Length: 272
Image (tube, rainbow, N blue to C red):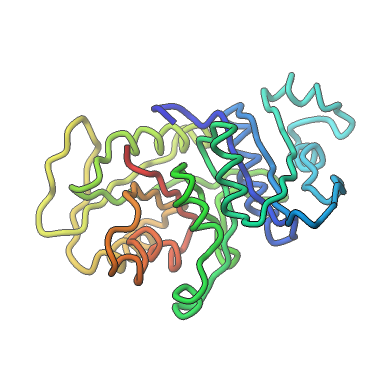
């Protein structure tokens, strides 16, 4: 994503009902950005399951949203909406490795994934497949939790993305990430606001032109979450440099800790 909207979106799915909200977000973003959408299922090598009817139904959802006719052909979807869809089933011993290989091969510039809420003990003992996948692929990743509302209505396709919160800090250059976030948000809602926040005693000096940066003091994660609730953020966008050191590996990065408690979806965008 070089200052543009995503052109190749990968949505890894376990084909469960719970993953349909993430699918709806991936599909609505792909429509707004006229992207190529890959719907990807990873299965064990010993499993032979080519039941494509288990995959989410793209045309059925688009028709329910009123974007195409209920009897539209596949080629008409591409012609009318500029949307292309690939459904892929890949065999791999590891879901993370399978998604990583697929993302590398297809030049993905956005992952859209569902993750379930977990206790602190669960997070310590068992790695999240979605979070591990995002770390390994180094691609921007949109996370939705099963217990939180998203910004796309699955039944109607309506977009509720009015306010995006993007925390910034001196060690992660924010300008590139800000452009990516603004481009994506405005593709979905041209009137969306991207609000910047720095947690600390003083504002850092950043290169390039950025809008107003709100300055707040306090514990970083708690302050980000509190401000997100205060401004009623529909999305939190986190520029990230990945895990740093043993303490971060045990406690989780700031991005991961915000993800586990955020009141809305989170977009993690690796710094370049």
